[in-house]
Image (cartoon, rainbow over the protein chains, first blue to last red):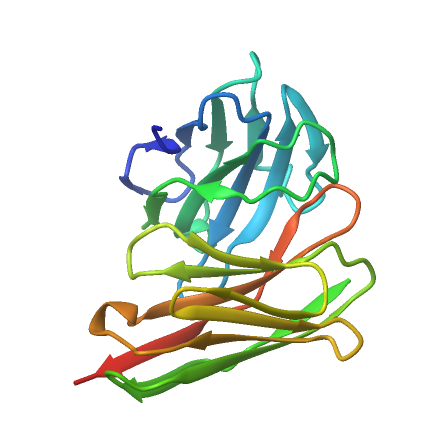
Amino acid sequence: EAGVAQSPRYKIIEKRQSVAFWCNPISGHATLYWYQQILGQGPKLLIQFQNNGVVDDSQLPKDRFSAERLKGVDSTLKIQPAKLEDSAVYLCASSPARLAGGGDTQYFGPGTRLTVL
Amino acid sequence: GQNIDQPTEMTATEGAIVQINCTYQTSGFNGLFWYQQHAGEAPTFLSYNVLDGLEEKGRFSSFLSRSKGYSYLLLKELQMKDSASYLCAIMNSGYSTLTFGKGTMLLVSP
């Protein structure tokens, strides 16, 4: 079974530029998550989708971050404009849970390492 | 809100046993996960506890006490490849979101 796919794996941009990350979850997984992991810390949830609807985006900095999952499968996360403090690894995860609160295990992709100069 | 505490770093010797503790405070609890993360790689699932007690899976075991807000991950017969960060995460009731601790970096030496 193919795992969670993410691209690009690495990205270097200047502050105030924009950047987009792509994620393709495990086939059949209804729930998709985007996390931000700053060096030396655990992942922090940015947004959770159930199919193509947003379940939780309470920690997403909505003035600069946006995400979509239009067809309920793959997803993009965008940052515009980027700040120095956005330098981090952006992890995508998916789980089979079809109902909120299902408690399923989340499976992570390899992540995108973003460096903002 | 949630608060999760785990040691920042631990060291151990190949072949030994090590216990990584995790304490937590949360307003809604739907289980506790342990993930392993090697440097530069994605977290990989190790264990899930939702009821009190010990779950054993090969060389790895995980324990949960909900009344004490406490869990530990026990690694036996340590191997060099076990050098990694170990992340404790609470699954929140409601939307099954995970809140992660900062992780414990385990260094296994020969």
